[in-house]
Length: 356
Image 1: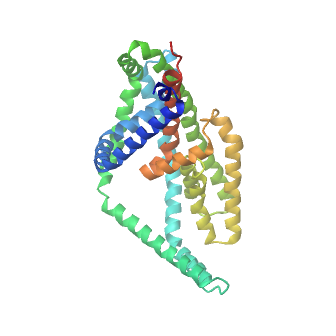
Image 2 (image 1 turned 45 degrees about the vertical axis):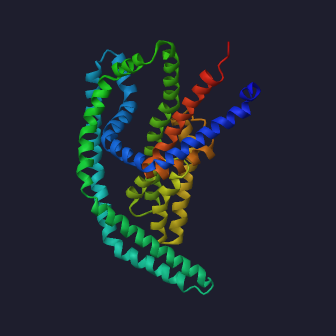
Image 3 (image 1 turned 180 degrees about the vertical axis):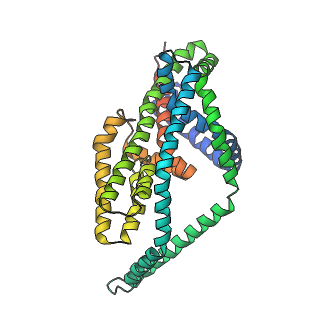
């Protein structure tokens, strides 16, 4: 019997069975977990957002603090710079957005007629089998129903806007106190850890910060750069609503691998209502921007990678999207990167530690 307990395959089988048992139990209590998750999400969401903001800004506060600036003054200084910059950007960009929204609303009937003519031309094409045309029309009807349902659900849940405004109001205050007392919070958290595990815990936190720090901050900067490049490209080819479409590209670029496709889709759909030439130009611009992002911008800005295989990243995106939608797609890779670091430390310090 002792021979079995020392066999790594037998131990692996035991762990696999325990994991499957835990998964089965979680599936059985899924309704309870979802209820608890919904409750905690409503309460902890402002704190979660504030922690992310604090994590992003803490290096700047630390640099100012090292230069003899008190942390409270440093945080207030960063807030002042951010609010001033945001005000300048809003005052200059908002009129452009409003102008393009008004123009889009004005030309929407023409675009709808153009799209309808394209659909009619597709249906009248005698070279296509009836099954293909039927499937295409069924897909369009389904898409229209989904859009209508999404708009209806949004209008029914318009009351949630009050909750969103409350979160937007309270987050800056929570982030301020976290940034101000960041070092105290760190020391308090470490004081809870037993002394014999404190050094390992510090090493774990440093590794997590190394894995995530440059990635998260760099990705935000990369998204801004990608948005600017896309706007310049759309503007150069005369693409309508260049700022709106480039903003979509910038926002979705934060999702690895899949984001560029989502970001380019609205521009390509819009270009299809203009001409085939415009579709090709838009596709070329997005392809060029993504080549620059993958080979020049990200290596220079982000620097270190998370050392995660593309297949694993795609798996993480599928899991995150299934669990939390768009937010899950954005947070999936950082979350799995943290879990990877934690698992590596567990195996290093507990599974593979030398026996005495």
